[in-house]
Image (cartoon, rainbow over all chains, first blue to last red):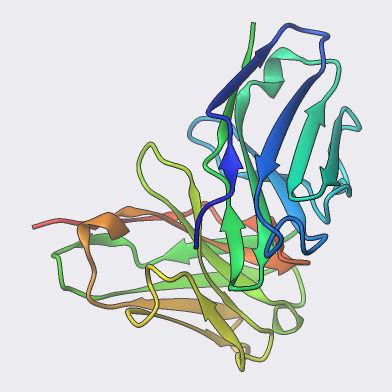
Length: 110
Length: 117
């Protein structure tokens, strides 16, 4: 059960757009449209931002969007704001187990 | 409003056991699959286990398979995680979460499990 691969950190300036990639295999990210993204601020409970690759739960800003190409899923945040600074985790359904997570990406808003 | 309240965490010695509980309210618990997830101090999220709505299907991460047991009581709207043969690397905040399409839209506040002598 290898974790999904995420960059350790990414940064951007307010107003910019950033993309966080999440790479898996054909047995997880590439094989199913069950990729999710979570935002976690320090000391807080994770919050679901994207599910089923592209779907936003009610109440999540439309500045957050998800996509997938082959074995790599991506989270894009447009119009970056200071409150977007947080850790972001991808997850996917996997055939060998139920769910895999990525190692997390720390977003810094400069 | 969905509410999930974990309990049962604490300090336990290596090799010991602990049972976590998660009281659910605000949604139709008996029709939802549920997850347990954890986060070691300063580390990322890790999925631990998942159970079907009627309890007939259970799935585990390799690192806990054979040591942890997930179960549920739909009459009491409660989810459980029995943890045996605990190791130092099991030290983490444990969260229960409601499942939806293999994602977790609702989480509890978590309960801390510390495995140490």
